[in-house]
Image (cartoon, rainbow, N blue to C red; front, side, top):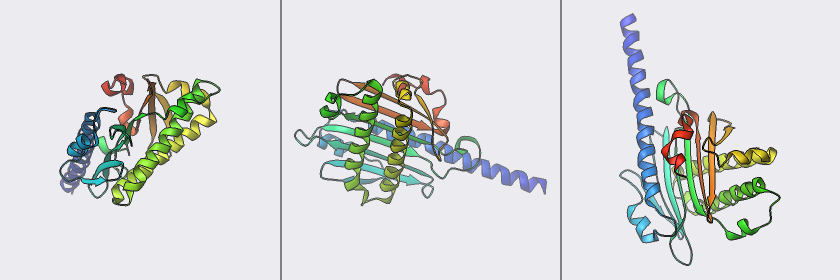
Length: 240
């Protein structure tokens, strides 16, 4: 009897570990694609030729393109998306997302996790608008990012339930961050620190967010769950 229980436990642990490894591997694949797009440099033709991997759906819109996929019946979902400037057809906004919203169990997959990265050329009107202080300015930039993200992905969502689910998770995340910052604006001062701003996600455990604004470009990185471990030592956080 004990022998059967041990074998059952080993089988469960094996499945959980494999699931966790799949999420980690997908992080690497998804964000490698994300980093290959250079804002104001990569053309729509460049991005279309390289976005998407084997097994992913690729969705072409009038002014944006996305690739997305899922594994284990939605236990891991991900997407990449890039939007282009109307006049130059150069990449002006890019997004990457990976989450395991249905994770349960032990080990690497014991917590539901999410990672979202975004880098955008900011609407100049947002930067030029007078703000009460720097914290108010950061909140306004985050609101502008949410507006741009929603506008870029909405035309593409109808072609993929995976992309729609991921987009919804990101919008809920950004709205939650904005709500917390409006309730306590001083916390916006933590956004540019390497340690990031701490927050509690309503379903995805504790999170970290870092946002940097430089020369008309905003870069945002958000992680939740076990992915926030050693946040301030991660190379892609330090390189922002």
